[in-house]
Image (tube, rainbow, N blue to C red):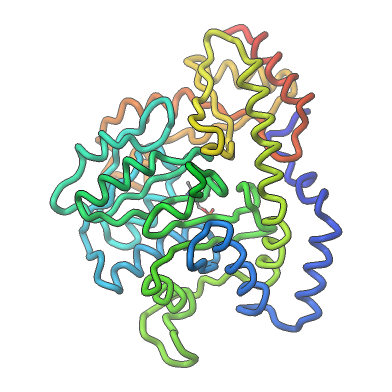
Length: 367
Ligand SMILES: *Cc1c(COP(=O)(O)O)cnc(C)c1O
């Protein structure tokens, strides 16, 4: 069987270092908000070339707390409109609605899967206050165009970088373009912990300070509470795991690129569209997503051939039961993508030999 992502082998390759880091935390006697977190925050901020990194419990909290912090600072208020790609993972929307902000769903560009700047421009109203571009599947959104729009209309940009660790354009990485960015370190993400974890990167001092308080009961100083905050902390064990894994991120991304290029060079089936990838450094291939009008048949045949694939995502956020207020929306590009996308096996421990087998199985599919 060729698994979709073999996390066990990804982490087994770093086993000795992970165990050593784990032992260091156990022996330190300090398990929350200690040296490992401070060091990881510094190392990840350096990686993204931002002034700050604030560790939190998960990626959803990273997005939710950033929007909340902008409310505390007076940059956003209830009912403000936030533009978001309609084909994102539902977490992006949850962060908006949790804060009583209004999501404005726009159609993505069908070839990059990312926010389409022209569609964003058309969706801006006087109530629009922020844009959340999502670097979907690991491809950096069109940040130069979105920055220009944000500048023109005085909008905040929060990058949803949960799938984009290390994606860059002209040397500028995901997490460095927006006013802030939310990262997830869920185990299956390109930089994954061995449990839940997330972080915000920003170069804005006021936002960073507010976030540091919000994640810790709203406390900026022990036993004094400035905000009605939450408990959303990245613990020492996970921070220690992430410090080990960050060292190997670029090397792992390089392997993902090799797999992606093997697929791009070898998949020739006329009924399947391959993803576009832009500039070489722009894509970190969190997922390798093909499109087919016969997606379900293709998935079935690959399963028969012992190849595991997944669908990201089978149901669009606006069609979810959680959002009855959006169920009436007609978003044909988004709906078509949800019906046609299929994610092929991809990961840093995958071999080129397996990628060739997958490509051949696809070329032989009877669609
Ligand atoms: C994974 C993911 C999130 C949420 O991250 P968690 O750590 O699972 O909370 C948010 N947005 C996108 C695009 C994601 O892929």
